[in-house]
Image (cartoon, rainbow, N blue to C red; front, side, top):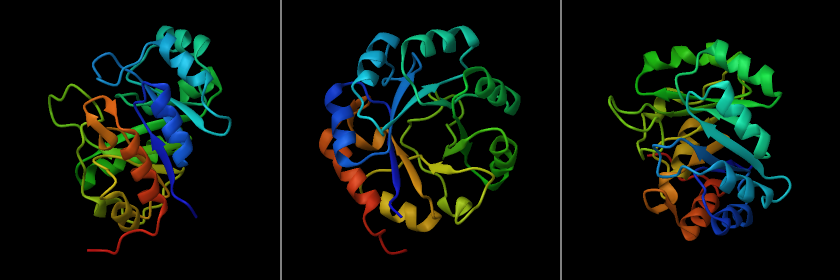
Amino acid sequence: MDTRVKICGLKTPEHVAAAAEAGASYVGFVFFEKSPRNVSVELARDLALDVPVGLAKVALVVNADDGALDALMDQVPIDILQLHGKESPERVAEVRARYGLPVMKAIGIAEASDLTQIDAYGNVADQLLIDAKAPKGAALPGGNGLAFDWKLVNRKYWPCPWMLAGGLNPENVGLAVQMTGARQVDVSSGVESTPGEKDADLIRAFVKAAKEKPAPKL
């Protein structure tokens, strides 16, 4: 089975096209003002309208209230909502019911004790994004280019599908897939030339590496 790839933090038609042509399964748009990958609702709408059929459009939000989500959903044709803040399981269920769309909940992992959240969220979300926990005091909840110990999630099976994120790049994604058994991977900073600026060649290289036979174990 091919590894499914999500390219997150896209801001230009060129890079959306590169992700589509490379064979990505998801494209992500970030709605978080502190992020260098932040896009306006207007720009996201234009980008989303050009996304080829069959490529899932994901909106990443952080602790967004109903008003912000209403404005987003009214204007941007989104397929999946990614909640990347401190949303509770109850809030995840509420958002899922309100908008009738699949919800992906991001969970930050740094040590084994962080895994205890997974069952609670896995029972209310449609997918989980298992990411590296942001350092204390970090401005961004994700997209920091940090990895966590992949052994913590090695061959884990949870209540819903999951996606591996955190510090992935074209050089290490094959090994990450092999070590964890992840069938889906997410990348943002790992395919950028500078923070917030995607590189089409790196996007293509990442998707190719993720879908090829994984690298041998170390």
